[in-house]
Image (cartoon, rainbow, N blue to C red; front, top):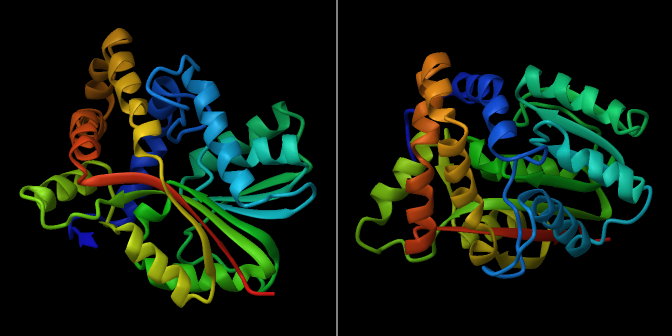
Length: 281
């Protein structure tokens, strides 16, 4: 695992308070990577985003009516889709009050307000009853956590016996000795407000130590990296950098990091993937 010391919780909250509008403009209602079948696939970014959500839900065998806790719910994309298509009861947690209100309104507009609720809480401090949920879902949130092993132990306690943990993650690449590896990962951490990035092996150990059994640990880098190519194109097309520089210079640091992230994926310094684990019955 590679850590940086210049990230604070308030910085992460501030990033999403204002940055959410840029995520929405650049990408869409699911502010996470898309998943394409191949580099030649013609699916739109929105379809690819939905495909990632559905692929993770299928791997986790999420059934109708299950109770889900969505950690790092953003503006509610995954929560709303799970509620609408799988009739799940979903509680979303986000560090950003802006995202909480956005998700709440979106869920009502999508007619799933009665099946969803959203909390503006710190995922590393929020409290839920033991054995309350069938699924702990988290897409591209654990990168922002400061004590990842402690979080997984707490999250495992929220699951019922037989419950599943389903996460998508920006992983540190496995070849940690590659020249320039540390510098590149540290730059990604700084630009994208991540206190640390762990490898797939790190995550497997943390989750196993929390008492869960890992059933899937997949690498989706080749199928998802074009997310950032699309974002770069939209930045240029809609003059997003100029808008960001007028509103918040920290958002410019984020936008200018797209090339860094692409380089990290292409060189193996970073991997994008998913892990599913199950709590013993």
